[in-house]
Length: 229
Length: 169
Length: 146
Image 1 (tube, one colour):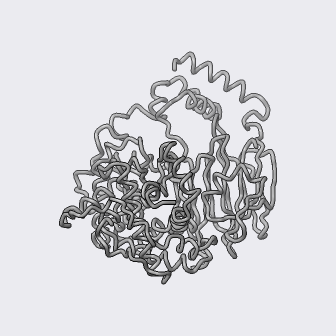
Image 2 (cartoon, rainbow over the protein chains, first blue to last red):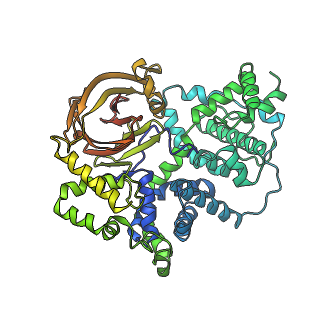
Image 3 (cartoon, rainbow over the protein chains, first blue to last red):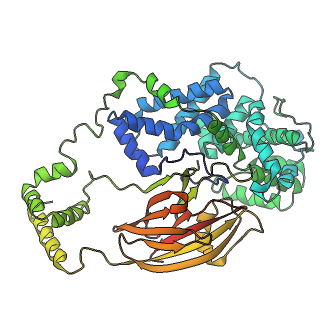
């Protein structure tokens, strides 16, 4: 979410079970207070409220559905353990997602071999013949009536999974958790310039994959490449 | 426009308000005014904006979460449910409305004798920054047809009513 | 607070309560506008809705028109029924007003939806009041002290 608050442009309503009250920030704090006092139902309500969002962040980073489920559950266990430390200086949802993405990234560190390739530098070759603008033209100006948009939406997670871990992670932190450049720099311990270039590469690879899926013309920068050029 | 300038400015496409310095903003705007390639990159980003977040949430919505919270609670050890020190239930026995009545017995008697006046007086007393009284919920929505979503904006809430299946899908 | 201060407040409360009609607060002027949002068509916002652009801009509808308006002085806990273009109606009730906030109940019977929203006095509510049909949906904007 944006640092200005939970304001999200959503073309369709989030799938919330019928009859579920949708309560805003003041209610989160009331539930947290009760959960701190040992109220299990209050804590369970918080879990149910945010389980899907936490899972979506974890899934985007770790790719594997079972691992994402495990990371998501562990996220709420950590949330419960650290409830006394939550004092409301950020929104509860921001706090929970931060714990979730940290755990997701940590879970990857335990499994992957270190990559010695630099994925962040932007070279001239990155800007040649990339097919820019094709997606925008094909998707058009009518968001929800566009069949291509619906088709690509279904391919997004598949394309995301094909990105290198660093690109996948930064895209999820940016697009799903809503972190700013400054927050990304701090979270990933990199400079702002590196944040921007890493996002540039991640988006470029993502868009190339989506163009392929859409049959709009593959370019030479397909998602399988690991190098920075 | 030369690609040297694109190398510098293209990664700044997609910045949100406030993330670039005034010099960077000005430079990017100038570059976009003369570079079709970067304008096209911006168009692609705009076209895809929000889709990744929605796609991951759609994946989550397709999964059955019926047992998720049970699994979370099962992982939390029993001893962790005692209620944290300094929590709302600890050390606040004299707080709240009942605590106030204990401290103001004369007022409590008057309240018993004149219920309507006591309610009005209590409202006046609450207005005197009595911090223990919880605030009313800001937004509460119940919807029996497809759920609802509330967006929080600085100008006020926006309430959207859900559909069982979004139109067009 | 001392007992003396509280006693003074209680005396004031007695005096206030003795006045006829004093138990209910004064009415509050409320403006309700009915809006139609459309996904199709050239992006355009009715100039009368300029004050809502920040809120409406969060949604996917690109074209906004004002199709109805009602202004009323609302009493507490007395529902106001507002007719909607699709034949349904919206029921609005003023339930509370404090120093800086006001609370409304919004009921959309056709959608079996009940909302209770507390807003600051310079804010407004934008509430969907019907399902989306053919790429369009109706909303109500509710503003106290317009």
